[in-house]
Image (cartoon, rainbow, N blue to C red; front, side, top):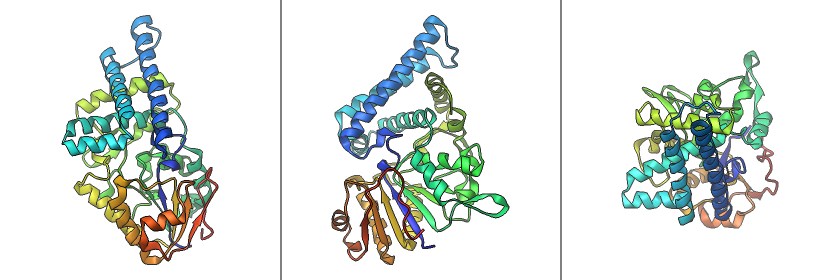
Length: 344
């Protein structure tokens, strides 16, 4: 099998995560509807728990109000800016790192709620059903020739893989599906199968250099109000520094030491790529520096490129990245499943 790399954008996780839809109008509409829903759940929880006493909750009234205020703040700034990324870049340029930190925290709350309140996107489930093989000792094996570079902050792919591996939590994936950034990454001698180019938006427990996302699984099948209650309690852990999110969540224009490791891993994968499949990615300006660096590496093997995005074609892509002008680029019109190239 040739070495195949998937480059994923927001469209890959849509519509399960409407916050990151690729088209600005739909993206804004999605976040507003979602925040209204979550805000309603918070208010409903607070009223039931502290007025009618009909629902048992762990969080205090103040903790629940804190979460509600965070979502309200996020919604207001989503309305005022072209995108959440634009707002984040403004905070970065202003040097308002406290608010940028708060934005990451609120997005992490939101992504956690979304991924706990519904199953992973069916497109990821179908992808694993297609590419996984039965290996030694009848254990599912992810092909070493396939790599995933994703600009998405979510853990949809990792979550979708668990049932196939017969596992209960992301931390158990270990060598079966290495992802970066991840827990105990530096102890691994293997190249990751999945690289999150912007890191991961989520709450996790910190133990030395280990990052545990076990709460994502613990919250599954809970009623929405109960997930909100749990998130409000997690805020206490965050304030006490036993919970975190920032170390694994970064925007493309931020430069930190671990960001360099991310792009280094991605460039190594890109340099070996023989087939590139681009899904749901619109190549926003904010990511241009990293994208140019990646395509400089992609071009080394003159890969066959498949585009699975109705808003992008071969001409657009070659205009953006002249280094791939001699590549064979093919448009894929079907978008309800991840494209499986002929080379698989």
